[in-house]
Image (cartoon, rainbow, N blue to C red; front, side, top):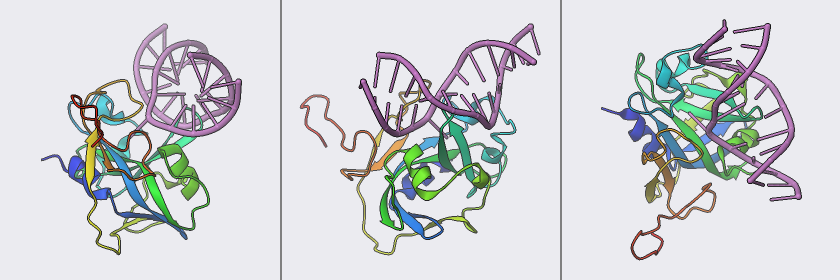
Length: 179
DNA sequence: GTAATGATCTCT
DNA sequence: GAGATCATTACC
């Protein structure tokens, strides 16, 4: 089984919270344990990637391009790599900055390397079910900003939500109409 | 030790 | 389309 994909899908619509700030996750990407050259864990365990091989529900935070932090949640059982990048969320409360895009999201929530490895069921970063049981329509597309394994359809987002970074509709190849 | 490489964002 | 900016990694 590949829980990572299920987790990536399942996180859409969930509430992500840090301190008094929280929002609704609207965009995620899955990074798999096998056949995924884009995953940081693709070349085995290193000091940075060790948490990805640990138990699920923990935060994998790293610095990209020397200036932005990205937040991931470990998805697979201990011993197996697999995590989900949180790319964007819809602000609900306590958010003063934009949350559209992984770098902006971590900045808005105040997430940095200190949160590396923290347990998402205990805090300070936590994930909750949304109160309103609104059913969301989830669309899939290739991931954004990667060079390797760029074709894999592992990006999940709430269709049409304006806080999604990048395309928030799918475009029909033949008709050119957006879906 | 040294050098190459980014799962981004902002500005031009 | 380019630059900012630095932790991490691979390779000497």
